[in-house]
Length: 223
Length: 223
DNA sequence: GACAATCTATATCAAGTGATAGAGAATGGT
DNA sequence: ACCATTCTCTATCACTTGATATAGATTGTC
Image (tube, each protein chain N blue to C red):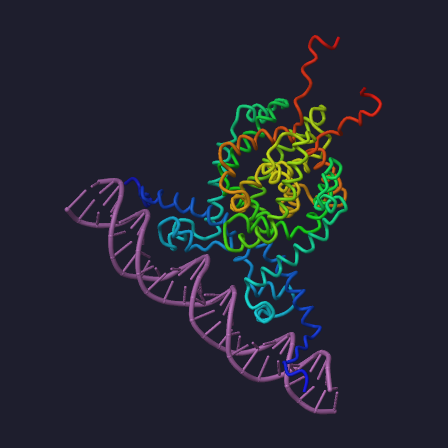
């Protein structure tokens, strides 16, 4: 007389369906926006049928939320660098630490173009979805990067620029080439966004935002 | 026995309708993408009825093209600076000339947020519309800016960064705050994108991309 | 001011939308 | 091997979409 509760016996194939739907959803939402992406096209891309979306996620809206969480967790994995961990742990960030974060961001966003495409498409108009995504995902990133810049600026390590301005300039400079990759391919061909481009882009971000290498430590020279 | 051809007597009110539809279309396309924006919502925003779109523009697709041309002509007016004219006229661009172009770009895009919202939404997925907009509008801008940077770089005036990388970093840094203004308002409040922000942003762009002021001319000092 | 041309408004169409109902197939604990 | 549960698939719903047909109102030229 044990186990009166209804037993739940999830089947393995359901996980594969959910995963395929999440990946397909991000791709379709990124390419066509929330309203522009149809549940049928998402299901077709996932190799399944449209009612599966409502079965597994209840509604198109909840599929969107699940897909956003899904891809943001990939981003968190991708940018989890020692430098970032040290900074979030309360340590004072250094010029080289911020440079490492910049490089990690470029590498991460270049590998997750759908995330930033979806973000930029959602952020162009106010909505309940935007409110949700800002409070759940964006604000933490903003606080982190803006706080790091403010700290560097107050110690005279970087230029005297407002942290909000830097935040949007930085995000824009880091993501635009990958967000607009279809355009970039038409403009300059396939060479865009290969490995060499990404590496050069990462170094360019460091040069642009942190300026030339600082003076060597004044160890024996000064005094 | 003159004028056998059917006379055309366009009425004045038609212009007002077309203009209202173009403005409404840009706003709706920018906010929801091409598929996401409905002709009924566009017509409602323009204060008219949905079949007017087909009467005046034949199809949703041609309305989109007309709206894009409409807003790009506004951009051309906004960035028509003496410095840009001198450069396009074949002159060699200077550091200060490029700085003036950067400031003009920031001012222009901050005043035409719908243009860059629409651009970034379209450029996230390949399509006939993207091909059209690239060949008709984007490529000229790319050639101009990339060429200017290459010229400055070859003369040692700016950092050694590939011009394609600079182009996307520059466009991203210049536009992201305005493209994502709805998000920015949720993140940091209404102060974003006021006049002071735009001015500071323009100066920040100069600092970031052109670096610190160059050494004073070596007039009497060197030799 | 007549009146043909131009523009606007209403009604409606076929196609596509997200969602649901329910039959059918696959799963896994016993 | 059974068989209740879980998952998948087909059929269909009410609604919205872009487009068209057509009736009605307005305009500008004579």
